[in-house]
Structures are given as structure tokens and as C-alpha cells.
Image (cartoon, rainbow over all chains, first blue to last red; front, side):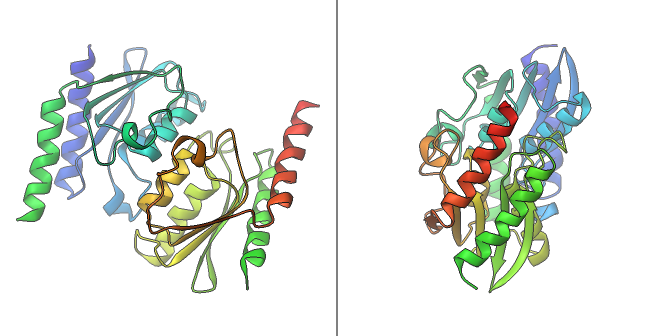
Amino acid sequence: MDDNYYMKQALIEARKASERGEVPVGAVVVCKDRIIARAHNLTETLTDVTAHAEMQAITAAASTLGGKYLNECTLYVTVEPCVMCAGAIAWAQMGRLVFGAGDEKRGYQRYASQALHPKTAVSQGVLGEECAVLMKDFFAAKRR
Amino acid sequence: MDDNYYMKQALIEARKASERGEVPVGAVVVCKDRIIARAHNLTETLTDVTAHAEMQAITAAASTLGGKYLNECTLYVTVEPCVMCAGAIAWAQMGRLVFGAGDEKRGYQRYASQALHPKTAVSQGVLGEECAVLMKDFFAAKRR
């Protein structure tokens, strides 16, 4: 199992969001080669701005492990986390963050580049094109 | 009802957190002179780094109003929000943020000063000393 495999799992989650009319972002948390949490954006469904895929995945992963800190985990998410999610990733002391598409408008790197925990390793661009196309198609359909 | 009154309500929440052994941060959301949400930090109790007072208050307020956006609301919180909470406050398009004590180490102003929605008005230092003392006493007791 490699980064591409786990990002594909996050993409499956993102497509579930899209099917519900939610901005298509999906996430999985992996610990010791096992997926311990899967989530997709549910902000519209739950009427809750905090219900981003990453937030739910972090909450679920901590619940599975029985501990708040995810330093032995990797979070795969289809789109660059926003400032809120970057803050949550920092509090969780996530071991590694892997994201697909960048988000120039809302991504944490623009507003809070130092927001992550210094020990969190970051990889970006994994299946980035596929993740970006999903977003573009969603917003294009919205404008029609 | 003025800022001091509502901050006192947030302080009541903060003390509830302290009594549970949680970092003492409390919050209330006020809409049209009515408190529509009350919350305190529950990160230890829920084993969830995302369970900050502000996050829960935002989720609860949106649920009460039946809408994601809180542009007619004021969030009162005893301590300066962290980056995660500032991001959530931005997504909620909070009308106004009032906080008590500053947080030089973890507050959003250090890491992400542009994180809030540009239309969110910010006031700080309301009952600031009282809010800060609660935090200092909590951490002093932890070190004993």
C-alpha cells in the first residue's frame, strides 16, 4: 500500500461528498498500514462549517485509537487543508499530512504557513490532478 | 446586557471546564441579545483535539439557527482563539468576536492574523484579567 493507494481511498470519500451535493473533499487516516478513519465533507448535510472531511477523520481516528495524538498516523486528504483543518492537524500532532490538489484561495499555506506542528511531514500533489478535476467539475456544474 | 455580562457567562462555562480538569476556556454565542449556544473545552473528556469551546459553540449555534452562517451573531470566548478556531469563525462568517485573555503562544493572531473573515469585528480584553487568572491558576495547579 502506497500513497497513491490511500489517496484513491480518499478520492472514493470525495466522490461520496459530491454525490450528496457537498464540495468534494475526502480524507482517510492511516496508522500502521491500516485505514482507521474515513470521512468526507458534510458541511451542508450537517449545517455545520466545522464538518470538513479532515475534522471528522481526526475525531474518528482519535476515537478508534483511544488517544488524542495521531503522531503515528498519516492523514490523506484530496485537497490542501484550510486554516481550521491545519490547526486541528497541529493539535493532533499528526505524523504526516499528504494532500492531492493545492488550494490557493482557502489553503492553509497562504494564510498560516506555520500552522502545522513542526514534526508533521508534508507531501503534496499525490494524484493532485485527479483531486483537482473533481473540484473543478463540481463547481462548474454548480454554475450551470 | 453588555459585553461584560456575556463574558461572565463564558467564564461560567470556563469554570465548568476547569472542574472537569479541562483547560478552562468557555464560550457563548449571542444572537439578537439572546444566548443561543454555551460550551466549554472538552478535549480531554472527549479525547478529541477538535472539541474546543468555540468549535462546539459554533456547531451548536448553527444547529439552533438552522443555518451555517453566524453573521448576525457574536462569539464570546474567554481566551483568544487558536488557529483552528479562527478558521472555523471565518467559515461561519461570525459577525463579531469578543475574547478575554490574549494567548501569545497559541492564539491565531501570531500564526494567522488574516485568518478571520474580513467582516468579523474583533474586540479583546473584555474581563481579560479574570479570564487570564483562570488559565494561570489551572496550569499552576497542574505543575504542583
